[in-house]
Length: 298
Image (tube, rainbow, N blue to C red; front, side):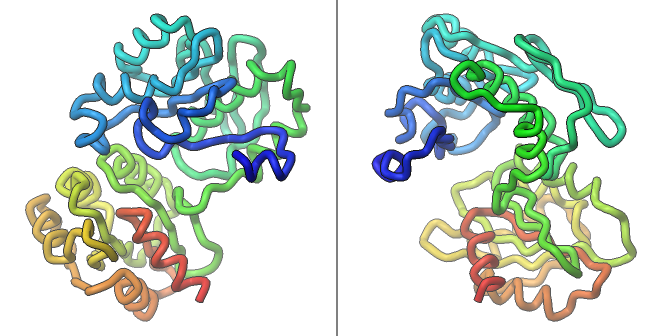
């Protein structure tokens, strides 16, 4: 925050790293807080049910301030905590939402409705819900942070997040995605299904950490790829490529898998053999995507 203050920024948007209640960003008294989704991850710290994790995530809410949830099935624990502290809870499909239309979409919320909005530049089926949550937050803060319709359109059309279904320019098509749990894997699978069909291969470059639900991720994505490049990520928490292969085999995939000692090697081999109509999908961990980004930028 000292760096933000020195830069004279108008708005700080902070992303929670783990849970909410005990995360470092929760030392700040936020003017508005958004919980986008609740699913199983970091169970050793947050609990092994959606209710337990929902309670932890609700820890970022503040009494008397906007508390937004874009999960269409909000845990009862999250709703109860918001009520207990007197937060202004706004739930998707109840207090705000969206309507998808050909080539555009509509937003409805507690303070305003917006028609003819452009599809977000961020790709993926979840992005309209995310965008609706953001518009709700901006509407609740508009007395302090006035934005024009042009500002909102520009934000939707230009927002980008590295490593979140990031599609790189050129051929073959390359997607970088930090998906590392079953929920994110389901989103990744849905997004891949929306990509243009081709006769080429769909190659996974995958490395994961051994404390993640590897079996759940593999089971979710077992039909998404025609070939797997499995690698051992850097660091003591990494699952070995052989461990990934075991989980993939248990999931029942029929696609062949090749093992590599490192992510960079798996990436280079995928690129060396790729044709223009192939797709290379890098996923499994922030470490996996970071290693490939270093290769791309080298």
